Every structure is written in structure tokens, then in C-alpha cells.
Length: 505
Image (cartoon, rainbow, N blue to C red; front, top):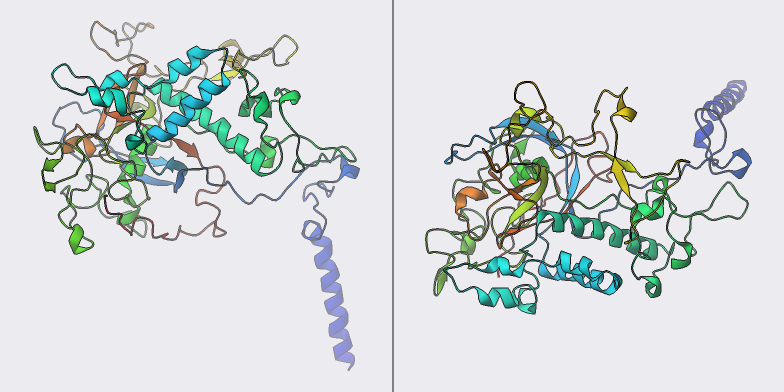
């Protein structure tokens, strides 16, 4: 009995000691640094909220981080050697499941026309170039007239869109998705009546507290301001409610996603690098259900004069583009990463990018900017469309910085003549490459199979467009690279994505 009492006493002492050394594990949310309380007006109102992880934005699929062999797996038939194989790593990111369709882009231009009443040039500037379908020795006028506007093509990829137009679409999409989130969470219920000209929702303007209060309605879901007794405040970055920006994928991200090598990996090794977005050396289905065997896996030009096969026996059934969810997705669940349309990526083209760029999150095209402020450090103004104004960073303010100095880093490490600043890329004299040459990847409905290999790369001026180039958006994954799983330090489990194959209709 005496021994039992001693054990009970010892247990009580151990429990009390545990409570003393674990102050942050109780009901109150306390700092493990100072012991002061979080989310408590008594201690100044410093906030620390639970965060469940980044939600997946509309249309996106998570592509988990990893190392891969970047570069062409095909024979370099053009002898350009502009993408020689090398090892690279990309962080986790999200990518659109499909290419952007005419319906999606039509929603965008409709919004511009409806909101920017005083600036009709904004709407006109965003319209795709339907004349891109014209060819001097072909009758393509029906596509000029119907492809973008007719409902028969609404789920087909938008084409005739330049790199600049695609970038503007991604920025617009960021604002609309975040606006939807604020409405869904009853933070700022959508109020369409004030959405005219510069009185529209812009994410960066809102987060900088420059959004006109008269144009938004405050809802019940506003976060509590712990600095005051009964106050509420607008959403901030620290809340993790708003999503990062939609943008074009980098070349490294696009190539990594197109390879879809997760299906060929075992333990810490990728057993086989794919030539296309699927296994095997052929463009035909060699596995799966017997009824699908022998079918073409993507939309491309099989041979001269053969756009889609013969009557009653079509090979890919794609004489021009096909719906964005056609054929079979790759192992990341992404459709048409080979064929249908080539796709814009974020990078500026250089033939020797493989020698210059970092091996982690490789990218060429950085132009660093800062918010335009007045002499008192306050935001000076917004532009006529309600967006914050950003200006290039200066050399003077970066004099003690080691990781960069200049604002424009597009030409960083470019070869120079005679040790001066004159670039060897003499546009229009010895080359057509300049800082506006943007990379596009993948094959299109009018390309041979060679261009469907993820490592191939081409370029076009950022202001130009064709009937064979479209795009899809990407978004960075913040926080854990494996998504919102609780298994933070374990290998990403197989999700089974890509194992079910969708039959082309």
C-alpha cells in the first residue's frame, strides 16, 4: 500500500514537470520563445493561427518536386545542341490539368469588356489573333470566323495568343480566383455593382491596403484584429487564405511535368527516361485495354499530307486541334503535354541556357522590381486600371547585395565583345534572338512527332502568335512539397494518378 502511494506521488510530480516544460501544448496558444500568449490582446495581439496548407486552385494539379534529367532525349536533327542533357531539380508546383480553352479565354475577354468601360483598348488588346489561321496557299477562313467564337470549339485550346497576352491572362486569373475565395469565405461578399474601370479587385492592391473601401462589402468572415477589443481587419498574407499568383510555367517545370517520370521511378532512381510523355518508343498505345491498342496517343501530324488519317479509319482524329481533355493524361494527370498545341513557357530563349542557369528552379528572364513609393515611403499612386505601379530596382540600393545588383537579369552571363557591354546577340544582324524571344515547348497539331519530345525547344517573339501555340498556367506550391499530407518526412505515396486511361472521343 505504501509502495502504491509512492508511485501515485511520483506520477503526480512527473505530470507537473511535464506541464511546466510544455507551456505551448496547453489550451492557450503561447510563444515557445518568450512565453507570451499568441492571439491575445493582453500581450499585444501578435497572431499565430493554424494553417492547414495551400488549397489547390481551380483547374490545377499538384506536380511534386524532384530531380530529373533535363534536355532532349531525341536525336538532335537540327544540330542546334540547345538543350543538352543535364541534371536539374524543380520545387513542387501546380499546373493546369489541360491547356487553356476558348471558353476560358472567352470568359477573360468578356470580363475585360464588361469592366473596363472607359478603356476599350484593354479588351481589344487581349483578343486572340484569329487571322493567325490564314495561310496563303490554304483555305482556312472558316477557322478565322468560327474557331474562337463558335460553341463547337469552346473546349478546344485557344490559339493566336502571344506570350504577353498569356501572361496578362494569368495575372487576371489570379485576381478573379482570390476574389472568389474572399466571397466564398464571406470575408468580402462579391459586389458587382462597383466593378467598373479601376474599381475592380486586384490582389496586390488589396494586400497593400490600397483597395477603395467604398467598392467592397465587409462580411462576417473578416479575421479578428487582436490588437483591438472588437475590431476586424482585412485579409493579409500571413492568413494564408489567398493563393499565390497564376503564371506561365518555367521551361524546367514544363519539361519536368511533361516527362511524367513518376511512373518510371523505383526507390530513388528513375529507371527509364521517356522520349514522349509516355513509355515506349512508339506514338501508339501498346498497353492497357485491347480495344485501345494501336491507337495514336496524341494529336500531331503523322506524315506529309496526313493530318488525321483516312475516312472510316482516322489515326488521331485531329485535323486541327482537339478538345483540351482528349487522349490520355500522363502520370501526373496532365492532358496533351505532347501534341495538340505547343505551349508558351516563362523563359527568355538562349541557345546555351543549359550552361548558364542554376540547377534548381532553372529560369532565365528575371527582372526585379519594387513598389513605387513617394518621398515618405508611402504608395504613391495606382495606374488607370487599379493596379499598383512597380519600377525597376536600382544599382545604388543594391550596392551591398551579393545575389544580384541590376534589375534586368535577362542578359546575365551573355557573352560580350572586347570586355565591354556590347552584346553578341546583334538582333537583325547576326541573329533574331533578343530579350523578347520567348521559349515555347511541345509539339502541335501541325508538327511531326519529333517536337512532342519534352526536351525539344523553340522560340518566338513575345508579341507574335500562331495557330499552333497555346498555353496553360502554373502556380508555386508554398510550404510542404508533398501537399497537405501529414506524412511530411516520408516518401510521397503513389496516388494512382494516370493509371486510368481516358479514351479519346
